[in-house]
Length: 219
Image (tube, rainbow, N blue to C red; front, side, top):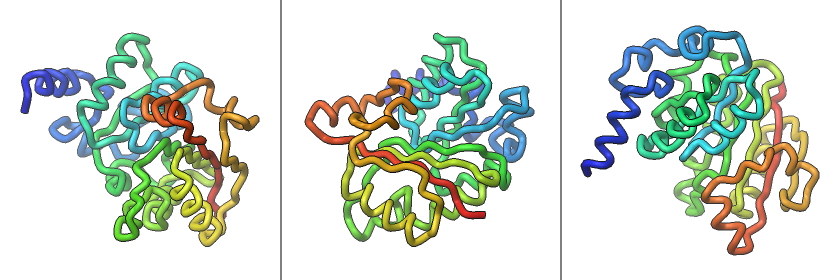
């Protein structure tokens, strides 16, 4: 491992708002995010596969009365988001380093109010369908974590993944609240508060359209 990466990991280790293996809270955080990390009873919002945490830190600035948690397995990506937390002195943003399929180890049933899925890996090969973040196995996890009537927002530039996701959601009989195949030409764009990930900036400059939908599970 390179020296620079070791420095980043050491900084993550010293950040109380980064929950990762080796820290005491990593084993006891389930059901205790509000009490142990945020010290309030505000709603909890997740950004899954958050990368640099652009939405975690961006939304935290827009909504100081909500708690935001970015989740990713890559420590160096989380480190970049942590730099924004430190710079902006955010007290309502945190990160969890783990795989998305392990979420139920770290959140109680109904502990989460809202989930954002922003430009996940499209996993275009058929053999990787189960790894798509809108596959039924993941949807079942989200449904278990969300409180009643909790909201899921999904954004991607992959038309194939978006079409797959819509078909899957129809089969799951969720309450589809809004959908657009061209977010930048939609009134729904205002829901994103000008937050653009590095990945999104790159692909929109190449001419890709951004697709977006939001839904709730039937209880």
